[in-house]
Length: 146
Image (cartoon, rainbow, N blue to C red):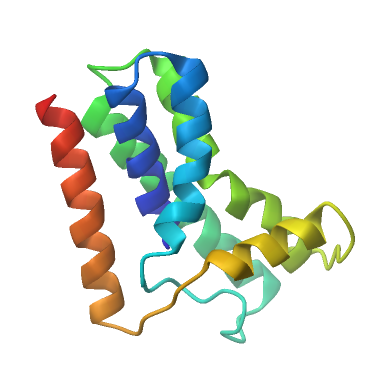
């Protein structure tokens, strides 16, 4: 799933669960649950991009998610908690980064990579993007209406 989507889901959780202890745990767990939904992403694992291009795409995706989550929920959630929840929701992808970018194929990075692979359910365009958008919209709208 795109990190943009993970960040918006994390922000939605922060808006729905005012207790950071609960919200941050749920934000982290949401990453793996969201990856179970058939989705499209940039397929940075197998797209043949250079490491620099992969890193650039990943950072732009993550930043766009943080920005969108911030814009949607900044008036409803403490800024520190909001940022922490979005980063926790993106967390497994950040932790897998050294495995992909630097070739660190040893624990804990290899463990995260195996965990990530276990949860991922890919779906090609356009359906994989449409399912992702639909799920994120439902979650964000539900949390904004509460």
